[in-house]
Amino acid sequence: MILTPHLLIGAAIGSRLPSYGGVFALSIILHYLLDALPHREYQIENLKNGLNKKFVIDGLKVAVDFFFGLGLVIWLTHNRPDFSFVMTGALSAALPDFLIFLFWRFDGKLLRALDRFHHQVHRPKNKKTPLWLGILTQITAGLIALFILYL
Ligand SMILES: [Zn+2]
View 1 (cartoon, helix red, strand yellow):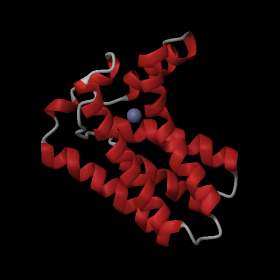
View 2 (cartoon, rainbow, N blue to C red; view 1 turned 180 degrees about the vertical axis):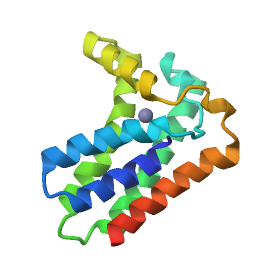
View 3 (cartoon, protein in one colour; view 1 turned 120 degrees about the vertical axis):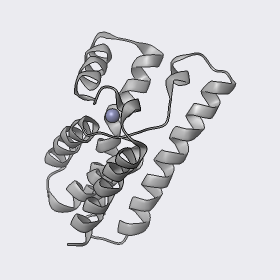
View 4 (cartoon, helix red, strand yellow; view 1 turned 180 degrees about the horizontal axis):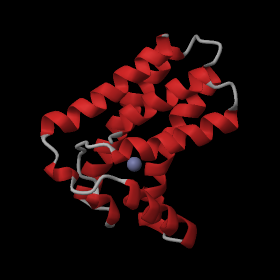
């Protein structure tokens, strides 16, 4: 999934679980579960290669997605007493995708193992998912997160 629904679901977990460790673990588990659902996402393959125009374009897509989702979470929750848990959840939920990027840039045994696991749980053939379904699952995830945040 793209980063915005991941950030929102992580924020929702943070709003319901008064434990930083629990929020961290559950947000990461939910990241992998959401990735197993049918969804469509923008291409970021060029981030694997060195710094060039395509790398910058893909990097901008990720940055817009990340800062939109993070800004939304901050805007919606900044004055809540559980804000630190909400932010822990949001950032933890985005972490698995950041680790993929780190693996592409730096390699390493642990990063390689995490990347392999991410690919195993990630729904294969997502490009064949109908666009309406691929968007609907992510909007649904975001709406469920908002429902949990405001329950
Ligand atoms: Zn992912």
